[in-house]
Length: 250
Image (cartoon, rainbow, N blue to C red; front, side):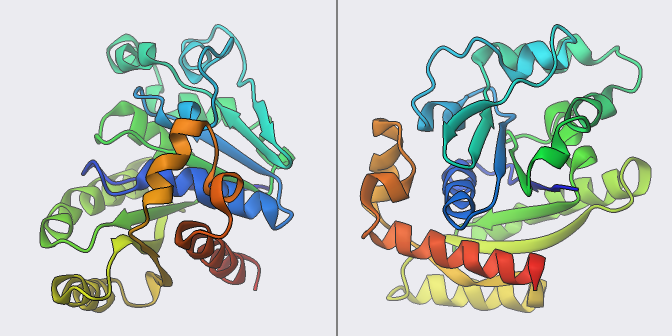
């Protein structure tokens, strides 16, 4: 059965979508079959692969108009596209019975087609994120090395605990990783020490360095490996992917 991992942080600008795009692409390069789900109404993950006008999106699927329709974007790599219309889904689905399980029911028929399913959650903790966490086996949290990023963790941990208690007993935070890291900055090193103290063995050793190529790649509709495989960004995300596989597969 495919492993389902939600990637969430309600603080914007932490590299969440960038990480889902490039971890997914990296795992695919390492021979795993990967599905990326764009659960964010901003549709940045969808746009990062140059998919601008998808015929089928997560929005219509959540409304019951069709099944999940993966789009092949690369070898071993498919995505479920998003659309700005998804921003209305929380209101539209609020009266649905079992509304927290809608995405789980959609994903179940296809999850075994993939080794890994990565969900890019929106930067909010509403019904879309709840649906993602209810379907997920594990939760990864990307963090910037800033103190304000740590302050905001309390809420996502609180939501995870409620989902685990009421909706999905298997959900655990199993991965925390640092993005936009600069080892020359004392603040960054201090915050990483704090993160390590708090999350201990859940923190990945790999840190994603600040790298302009990571910001440039989406404008070209490419992941970092296709855009510039010799960049620090490509080097760091491939290293992170290998670390993920060691944890997941031993």
